[in-house]
Image (cartoon, rainbow, N blue to C red; front, top):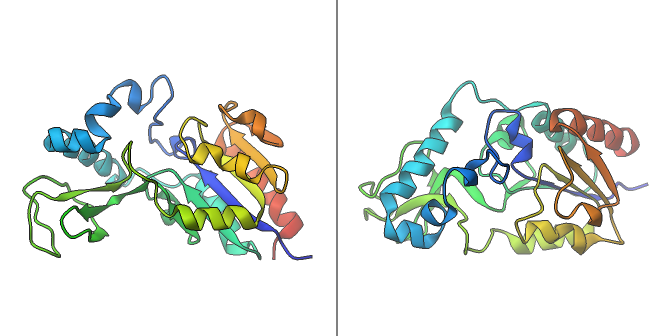
Amino acid sequence: MRAPGLVILTGAGISRESGLATFRDPDGIWAKVRIEDVATPEAFARDPARVHAFYNARRAQLRDPALQPNAAHLALAELDRRWPGEFLLVTQNVDNLHERAGTRRLLHMHGELMKARCRHCQTVRLWEEDLSTAVACPACGRAGGMRPHVVWFGEMPLEMERIGRALEGCGIFAAIGTSGHVYPAAGFVAEVAGRARTIELNIAASEVASDFDEAMLGPATETVPRLVAELLAEWGD
């Protein structure tokens, strides 16, 4: 029997055990910094230096050799390698831990912290160093337009058409470490309801937990390897 299409959605909860803070927990990033100050186009227009400082600090975290993919990231990379059918891992995360773990069939719907985009010429390129208003775009040479390649509040997530096609064709949908607060990702489970097996993996039930068929509660480093083992035992190569 042919393996069903598989779509995995990951959120900040999967990277927490690697040492990266989540956003919406009581001790998360948005409890310490106002969204309106660092994560909107208006904030960047008003105070680009402050926005750059916020993302430069987060980019520095990703450069820290102590930050490594955890068992959940590694299990999903194995699932990508061995899943014999259609597979897409959609992450809301802007970190690069999925890539470093080895996942290849991957899409960052909220952008990537280790990339920068020029507002003048729209060129996107790998960028691991700090950004500032003084940095000139390597493509067009103009300064002042380089920004983190991340999706801010009020901007459209990336690759929504590709995500939609994957959801239409999937037979299994799993969401890992997501809060269920942020749309459109929180609505993905409703899009596949009734025609795909849906599984939530989380430390606690999300805002949309009732939309899922199944739940696996606990740390991602425990629940994700367990789910991957179950899926590969049934459908793996």
